[in-house]
Image 1: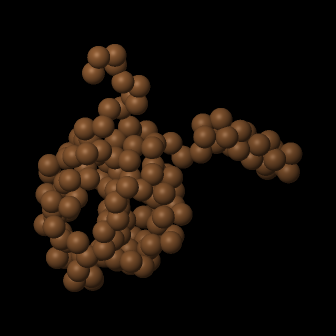
Image 2: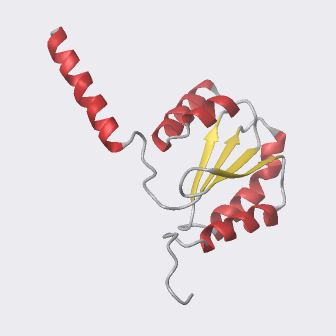
Length: 142
């Protein structure tokens, strides 16, 4: 492939990304992101809480588990983070296993927990995020 074609392809890709605004938040739902490793005993202790979150809020949230168990799973998680627009979060926190964050639908972090196994802490934040109207403009008389 000649240099002109390479430059044209790069310009096209950059144009598409700029037009699209970079990584998209496809769904207007809160995001629960977890840094997890199989070898981490604190992550194992967190598992039942994560199962409850996933079960109770299935279809209402975006749930992602960034697996840092090995180099291979870490690279897959980095790619997943990139596709979700949270690569900077992943790179900064990839060594902090059992970290859970919740982002509102706009991508703003609204909750951060480290070694927190109490489902109610997560439920309180998620319930509030889910109850918030999708459109911030309120209807008259309400």
